Length: 66
Image 1: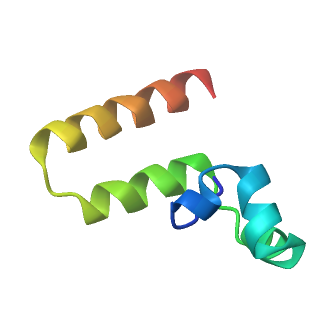
Image 2 (image 1 turned 90 degrees about the horizontal axis):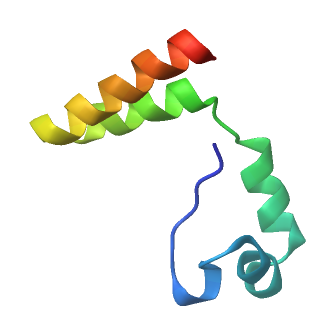
């Protein structure tokens, strides 16, 4: 999963490259996180029960279907 701080200058990959440069895009790509790890990191940050329930559901579905 590729993540970066959302701003008007970086709202999409094309905007990110245009405004921050290919080097920043490559840095982000070097730090890709597997989807399951990304979901777990989001769950660890968000203690909202509804969000955690949805994230756990997504983890179960991805475990079943890959």
